[in-house]
Amino acid sequence: MSRGYNFSSGPAALPESVLAQARDEMLEWRGARASVMEISHRGKDFIALAEESERDLRALMSVPASHKILFLQGGATQHFAQIPMNFAAGRTADYVVTGSWGQKAAKEAKPSCTVRIAGSSEAAGFLKLPDGYAFDPSAAYVHVTTNETIGGVELHVLPSTGDVPIVADMSSNILSRPIDVSRYGIIYAGAQKNIGASGLVVMIVREDLLARCPPTLPNILNYSAHVKEGSMLNTPNTFGWYLASLVFKWLANQGGVERMGEINGAKAKVLYDYIDGSGFYSNPIDRACRSRMNVPFRLADEALDGKFLAESEAAGLLALKGHRSVGGMRASIYNAMPVEGVKALIDFMKDFAKRQG
Ligand code: PMP
Image 1 (cartoon, protein in one colour):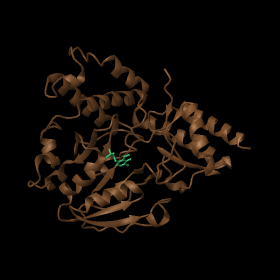
Image 2 (cartoon, protein in one colour):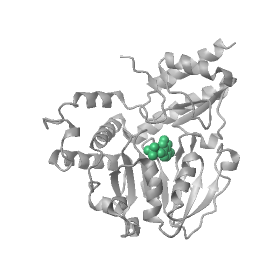
Image 3 (tube, rainbow, N blue to C red):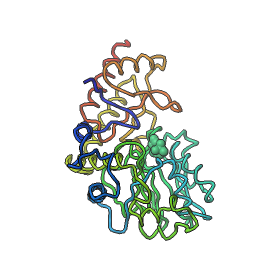
Image 4 (cartoon, rainbow, N blue to C red):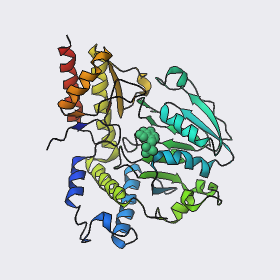
């Protein structure tokens, strides 16, 4: 086996014990005499998995009874478009833009509603949070991206929006620490970072908002219809749902999101502390909004980027290349990245810097 420490931004590393369990259950799952991929989603075995995974996620995130949980498809990008169709049709929606995913979400909303930018740090190169917000009290919702995966900017404090519901793209920091779900109208996340495999989207939606879903929408695009059908309006991504269910059990065994929050905080701190003190590496993001999940960094001389990447890869530290729009490096250190992986990265970075004289 030559698995490395995988710093990919997504699809990202999964807990090794989850992969091992999926391997062990690949040919036959829970006595079903078939794999979980080969059985009906409407059979009692899969329904039991669906219900249990929802219960587990509800417990992990302390999701209140006021909120429904959906297991959907389409990637977060589809929901950039579908959320305004359902919740802001013909109205105005406020968007807070702290990076390129927020920008994409706002762009995809434009065909369905009037998009207002209520705060943006674009002029500051997305290196800090917006200086302030100008919310419209009559907006259908305020959309935020709680963690910008590419830029490495995290919203550590949710803005106050009064009675206007917050819609949060939490794709890259869901389940990374405790949050108060009751403060959100909608939380949605592509699964391929902290939940499981790509192709699955988890959505948590406040039930009263479902009354807004226009009955003129085709059912497949209508969240209210998906809730009515228990996320089984059509064939769900059963294998993705199964993997998510294993990750939820793994998280509970780790001590839940409280413990993950402590571990993630500690992992990010050692890495940022090292970068800041190194004199060779740098991270340009305002400390108040640095991401605990995605740590972009630059080398003192970008001519060394190729060498750094080749040597880190050879040392078993995978996928450290930064996003093409930002350049440099990026270490994504989601829940499944153990502290040892971050330590191995820092050891490598120290050694590499020293060798450049
Ligand atoms: N939002 C965020 C914060 C992301 O990081 C990503 C993907 N990395 C997306 C949305 C888009 O997700 P998908 O590719 O699943 O549509």
